Image (cartoon, rainbow, N blue to C red):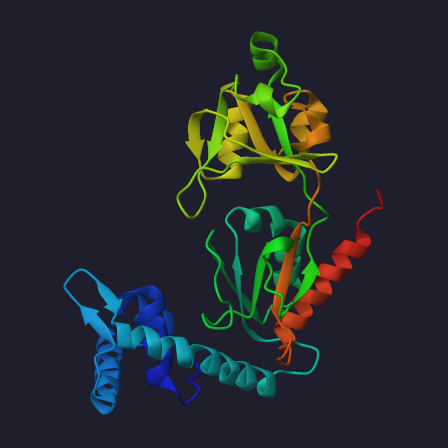
Length: 302
């Protein structure tokens, strides 16, 4: 593996990210002993402990957390510079690191991710899927993917999907047995498929019509934290689901699910790829952005 000359810093970040000396060693192509020695040598020179270690776990100390927060952006920039200066013109090489919300990766795999890897065989993609919002600069990512409303204002955003609508859906059988809700008040008489948010709470359905806004807590029969699982539960007839149209368009067209209260479901900004505007865009990220725009231009106009 190519080393940048900052081996100890790379080791510290890898151990912090993987929370394991052995996993960090595998990632870096080093022995576990070399990783342990690198961390111990740096701690000795800094005269501070960066990690608390036990036989079962590795975790940053408070001092280690502060240290990693400061060095991660600088080291990421050095790594980008190394990749850029050695890259063959028009042939991106290296690793592109992206942080994305859960479930968006499988949704974007075809054609975006698959075509990117085929077109640029010297590029490596590392995509971390998680619900929490992260500081992509501090945590060493080149770019992030989030809904438009969640993109930090100091970032450059590129549209990945059209606007999204959250829809109230149910099976024809459920509606035949329990009735069709027509207003937010009606929803309280139904059972729902709840969605657990990253912060631990259950999502309250946000509805709007004629500038009237409602947040409705529909009693859940089951609580899930993935859109695909919510779709499956809706198809089983358990109850009403409040779900992104991206996941149920085909089910609605085929009659497996019915959209109700559509006038209360307003569109909002869809998924955006975003990256720091104050930095030079590395070739691998630029190629990814160009492909996003190319695929968007190919899409038929509705």
